[in-house]
Structures are given as structure tokens and as C-alpha cells.
Image 1 (tube, rainbow, N blue to C red):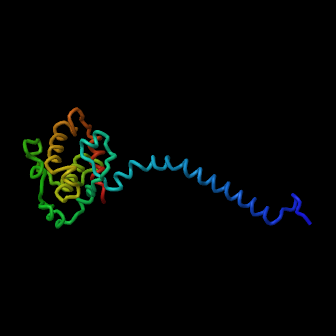
Image 2 (cartoon, helix red, strand yellow):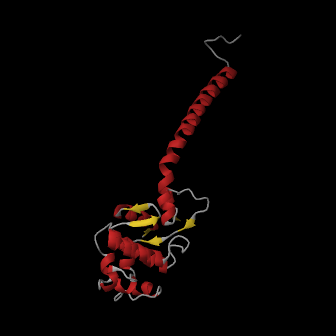
Image 3 (cartoon, rainbow, N blue to C red):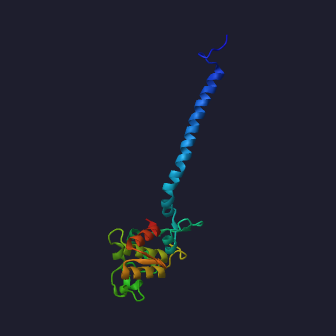
Length: 192
């Protein structure tokens, strides 16, 4: 007895099942390939901050965020520094309870007579440039931001220029607004 088209034999069942499986796999593979660039595009920029990559102010101003070698950066947030134990401050050579703006941000600055405690600046409302600058300063002292990216003296200049102009010049021909400076500092001060 021969198998008719209405009654497929055992070999015919396997080939039809196999072709259905192959078609399903092809569709899944094609969907995955077409979705991959979209996923990579969406995830590419936030990964810089999450991976702890640091960029210098001039590199950030240039938009050069695709460095071949990522420099690790694990700067603590202003909230971390505000809540840190006095011993953590002592480890970087500062007395948490008594260090003032005038003690840190000097050299002809309008802040040279400012008696405000650094902890008071760190507890200012969320997303203020001043508190991010203070956190960046503390992070440079604690080696949480590498000196190849940002030094305490550059942060000092940043504070002074922001106090005078409300902005910052990361490189010749480029001046950031307070919002742009804030955005940059938040990429450095991002570890809770």
C-alpha cells in the first residue's frame, strides 16, 4: 500500500515539521538581528556613566565620549559625602565638621571670605552646581576621579569661575552654562 498525499508517511511528517521549525527559527533570528542596532543605540550613552567611565572637561565638551581606553571613575555623589562619616573626610585630610568654602576654594576667588561649611553646600537642594563641584573636589582628594581626568586645582578653578560667571570654560572657545557644567559633573559623581 502506498501513501497518498492525504496520508503522509513518517518521512513526510518529519520534513514538514522540520520546515516549520526552520521557518520559525529564521523569523526569530531575523527579528533579533534587526532589533540589535536599536538596542545598542539606546544603551550606548548611559553605559558610559554606568560603567564608570570618566572624561576630562575638554573631552566632554568635544563630545569625545568614545575613548578606546576607559579610565575608571567612581566619584561619590554629594549625598554620599554629606552622609559620610567624619573618618572618611579625615582620610582625605579634611575635618568634616569644620571645613569651610574659604578653606578650600581660594586664590583670589569671591569665595575667599565665605564661611559656609562644605557640608551645608552638600545638603543644598538636589541638582545644584555648587554641591556637585564640592563632591568633585572631595572625589579628587579621595582618588575617586583620576588626576588624568580632573585635579583638585582644576575643580578649584571651576568653583571660582562658576562663582564669578555662572558658567565654566572647559576649553578655549567653549563656555558651559551652569546646566551643562552640572551635567558633566554628574557623570563623574555618580556612585552612591
